[in-house]
Length: 307
Image (spheres, rainbow, N blue to C red):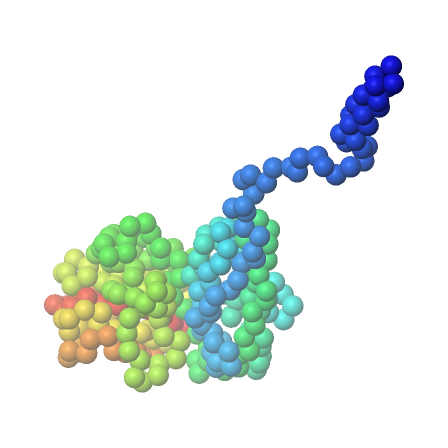
């Protein structure tokens, strides 16, 4: 009997110690499977091509951003802040290659400005603000119109020459083109056309930049433009091996009525940025601007200004 009691006590002690006390933390931890690949980093602004800090820009210059998100999510919004006014752009892409003339024209009057850039990704995470300080110079001519081909982005036109119509939404002016591409002939980082600028021409071209093929049917022609033209200016360069020989014409809506015409011939000067004008025209009424080839090589043209 005594031996039976001892055995019973030993078993009771054994089973009592093996129970898990209430409130203990020995339960199985929740699974973390599938969470190791989550991206908890914020996007960053890796680079700004233009303007650089302390740059001097003209009122009519383009504002150029080249921004890449450093995390795994696309950039959803780009915020450009000037004088406490935020300009918001829908991006939905990994990289931002963007130039915008409206910001400079409408928001940047004055001597000195600080421009702030901020991006937000598709997960709602924001980068730190990147700022640049710039000095703004008055344009020597108060141009009424500037065609920098910001929106000249038709599908399948890079490298391939195409025909179609390009619409400038800022001025509601359209351009018809035949045998034209939009990549400047060659480019650096898909942002800046490849050229040299030994004369330090201000506001040099940024992509897109039209290239008119060396063909007798190649043409870049504006739709009829109202209000006349008193002055004209543009930039151009030779993107390939053949020297330039092209025509500029100003006509009425009927292209058989020529109001101004000149032939521009350049000796071999590959990749050197040139400028034409400003020239005085003093033409009233509706007109067209027309560029055609005259037996020369491919022509890159950009930053057409007139008033």
